[in-house]
Length: 111
Image (cartoon, rainbow, N blue to C red; front, side):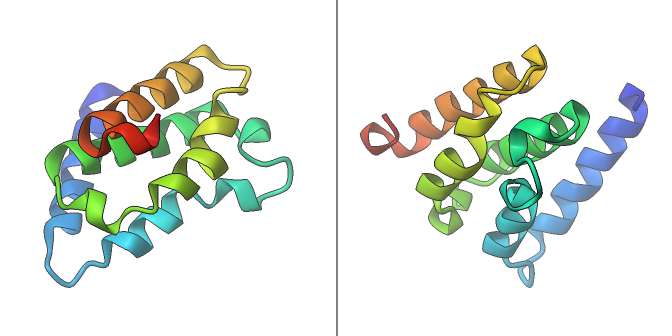
């Protein structure tokens, strides 16, 4: 995806998730459901995993209240920790950056 399309997509996603009727818990569960697919996160295409991690990071950075809707324990253990074993370096780097951002917002329990 080129950068212009990516920016438009992220902006649209951001606008949709800001609407008061959107359930952020449902959005999160929809983004991290890759662990339920055959092979889990590790066997998924790297672009799919990277884009979902980037969207979660976007939600976290734009909406601090997102942490209240987030089951961060399940997110880390079902999605981000397996992503750290992915073959692609971009997946591993983005997963690590999201874990670091979660630590900044939540603190010691993430550690």
